[in-house]
Length: 207
Image (tube, rainbow, N blue to C red):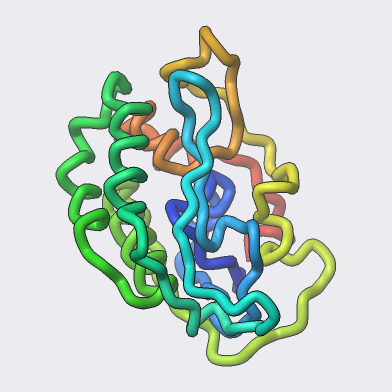
């Protein structure tokens, strides 16, 4: 069974695994990994790629389990994230179709990051019509070679071959692969699920 990092509006490759599996586990027992998709996502705006980061309550020298990470609300980051997403995708074919489903996520203050990410994951599965059961792991397993918890990372190229699809600002800045699955959803709408199901995943990867 796949063990995935629990992401904030995670990348397309994460949702390819969800779309092609009936059951996956999410990692919550690991020490929080900084500068990862666990508290950030990448969207595509008029001026290029935009990184949206959830601010956290962290003690710089202490390692904290993912399940214990708290969100900081000293700034109104939720309104800023939503405004950025709205500005980036309001002219996409399907933004208005999913807007009302996604909007409540940005008006609820979650104490813990895993609760926010679980909610974004649930809403995205609903929008994408992904029928995959997700659970948290009960204990930490050491990292292995080609571990998805490590390979699904903003600083690493995906190992999956992700086909091109039409993006709003592609004519200005070119095609960008493996963004937040929000980008795929707003541009492809109901066809996004078929896109995810058709991404080639080897039998070894498709556990």
